[in-house]
Image (cartoon, rainbow, N blue to C red):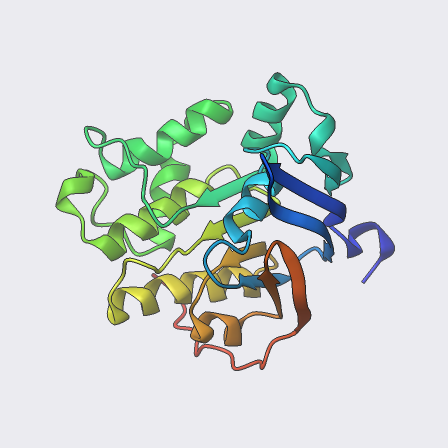
Amino acid sequence: MSASIERLIEVRDLSRRFGRVAALDDVALSVREGEWVVVMGPPGSGKTTLLNVLAGLDRPSGGSVAVGGTEVAGLSPRELARFRRETVGLVFQEFHLIPYLTALENVMLAQYVHSLTDPAEAREALAQVGLGERLEHLPSELSGGEKQRLCVARALINHPRLLLADEPTGNLDEANERQVLDIFARLHERGQTQIVVTHNPEIAAMADRVIVLEHGRVARDGASARRPLQVVHGP
């Protein structure tokens, strides 16, 4: 791997404090382009805070966070908005879908925020996550697994370099979890850089690397016990 693409993320001496509480305390890590990293740890260990800082949704109290060579903490509000539009795709445990928009319109809205809408590209994105027959359905007409797959399509429609997911299967049953994890596995095969916060050891076993946070610090950072998911190709 060439030096120019070896590292997408560089975090050094990162801290995030809320009053006297240190949600993140002297965190250092790097993530290579195309790597799948899982972040684990007990509640309150700083997992979601780390994702929010990487996404530019929260500002660090100290240290540096560089994504794609851009120092995120130094960006203005306008530059942060552009950074999120162009560099980061976000998938949350809560779906945050617009209830009165169809599946297709929810994806096209993400396109509109970035630049211009492209209905054909939005349809293709939904087909890639197995929702090609659900384009005109409202979120209320979709199952939990379908909603999460819609969220993945929305996160990826603008081709972000970095995909960040916070407990993406936390509210799903086993069958729907499998479908969503299959999408993440296929994305990894295609070279998508992704960081997934989870408590699920099944997901950790699929990733390249596992980072464990405890009390806002990195307690472990190493290769996963790699056990690839058997990927089902196609929607």
